[in-house]
Image (tube, rainbow, N blue to C red; front, side, top):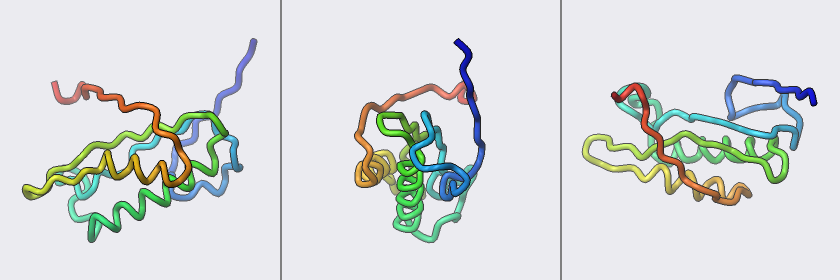
Amino acid sequence: MPTWHKLIIGNAISMREIEDESVHLMLTSPPYFNAPFDYKDMFKSYEEYLELIGKVAEEIYRVLKNGRVAVVNIDDMLINGEKFPIVADVTKIFQRAGFRYRDRIIWKNLMDT
């Protein structure tokens, strides 16, 4: 049975070119909040970061078909001795957008070895 797949690489904040409820799987890796290794001082505040995540969650919810899966690659951040509970906060934001929490998967990044 032939299948058809389309891979779209872009910014999850705005996906106007994608129809409502048309995506079967969404994978996103938003910037890590002010991560010193990649995104230092990108956001003025943690609240600004979470606001961005809220927009992403709403847009993903719009394009994802009912019953399908969104995968979000995130981690908590320790910045200048302060720990930011990004995983917990992003989970809550996605739930407020309409998602149901399924599972947390922890993986070992091969770049760390």
